[in-house]
Length: 263
Image (tube, rainbow, N blue to C red):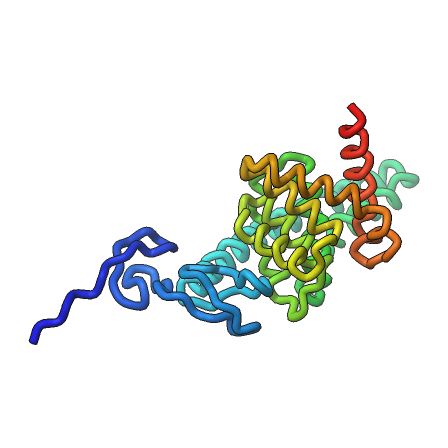
């Protein structure tokens, strides 16, 4: 007896026509699974868990990680080679300068030490790496260095995915990195999780408003901003660690939104 052919679908990862449980081109699962860390349902082709932010270990993701590591290794090797050349040049210049002008030798030696003393994040914990990379990504974003933002943002998101117990502060930072990198679904997942756990959390409200505005949902953005202003006084009295870490952002948003309401 003949059986009906399996329905064809579009792979969410590579866009190929696929049949069955896995894409034959890239190996991405075509059916929803569950998160290996928190057991929450996953959408088809998801790269991160919508609930806890853990990275989904599919064969396609593994291949992407390997490709990213190869690219990173190449860039690091190139950067190290360039750093060695710069260090040698500075060192030789220092030696020459020290011979001709003795008083300048110490300054040149400091320059050599500074060039060779770049921080090594490979020995840091995932939380320390994530915090260091968050600061780097935000600085690069302010400087509008888009290529560098894309490069370091992926490293940062991987670091956050390695944190076993994401707190509110980590979720907020992860969402901000995802936003500047254009990964809006991941940013929304973190914002939704924060607000689901604490509906008046100031950082969750700020995230939600910014994401709503990015999606052209001005009404939702204004509702969240109104809630932010309403609860800001009592929320700040809670003195949460994440409120302390992002006090400047909270203060700036409160001043901006309060001034806008008076116009």
